[in-house]
Length: 192
Image 1: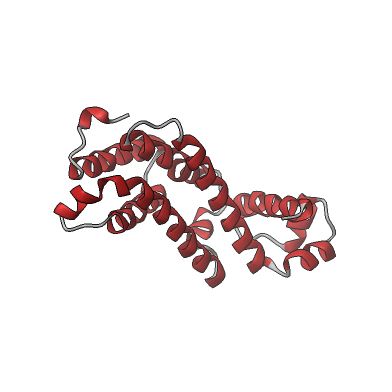
Image 2: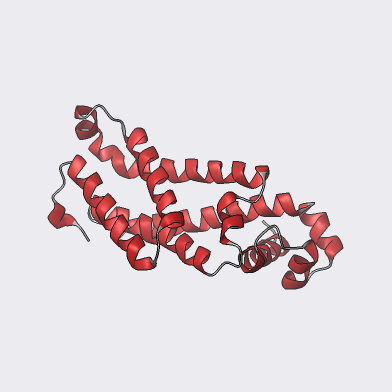
């Protein structure tokens, strides 16, 4: 990715959060990025491409942060904490500062919704990696790491949209993590 592309994507993210994708004009993004509208259109073509690039950028950044944090994790509990912090909690906080959270949640349009699905697939792959060491226990319950990862991602992505407050989100995540660890036979005392 070129420096100009990165600068435009970062500007798009800021303006989408500030106004919502629906209310953001390409001129807003160009101004925020400090580039001409022509440069913006030459680089990304239109708002749909910028929405997709923004979702992809945020997903990549958040999942890389999780991977970086996993090096210091010693249990599934702390791995899940790292995942929740870098993805769900960050997204929740971003939504709280948004001028149009509903627009961000919906993905704004078909291209955005499709990229959110691809993003969730990447999340699911990472969570499945965390659960693979527990494959035998999951198999005893008739589950695979991929199935439980799909449930984890589906639930926690929904929590970031439905939690009433940060305290509520934290409580919901602890409850969900407790249930996942109990399913795997991990001690609740491992909870971080």
